[in-house]
Image (tube, rainbow, N blue to C red; front, side, top):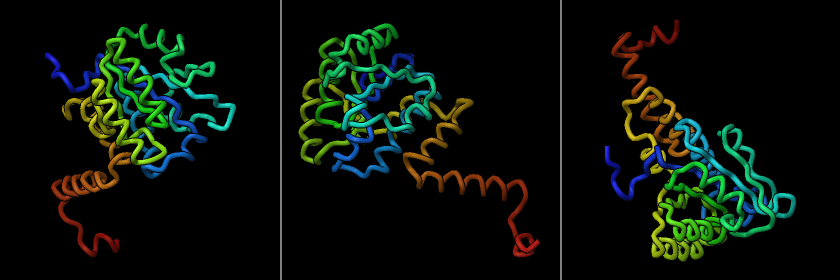
Length: 222
């Protein structure tokens, strides 16, 4: 099937999680940290489930920027960590670029903290190198809302596609008619959209009632 331009092609995709570090997270002021961590974890789990190559990196993790948050590699054991040697722009690290090139894929799903630097700079570099770049803004924390708005304008003008975590998951998933659909749904409910769990609960209850009949007070008491 021919893929629609502007929609993620999961078969051509690489996930890049850039600098999701505990120290840098202390600078984030444009979103709740719990949401940021949840969205990053959801991306990592989604890539693992969909077998999308995943690369992580960190900016001076032995310094004040701190280590990667542990959720990333716990959620995606196949993710490959690529160290940097001081480069602010991850794309300036030859090992990083070579690892991406070796996948043979041209669609990059990127998230980075902070948004205006760690996401923006490699996104711009990748666009220049001919990649299709989807920037996941709600999995990228920034020092201010103004900084995020400026970065959004800057990247879209350069040809980067802004996207959110839920959209990435749906585009990677593609269809509910797949054997692992319930696992995708579980990631959505657990990390991205807690209210989505209500849909699962109501569906499960409806299925139970259809199969076993409605519960009564005596059923609960027994």
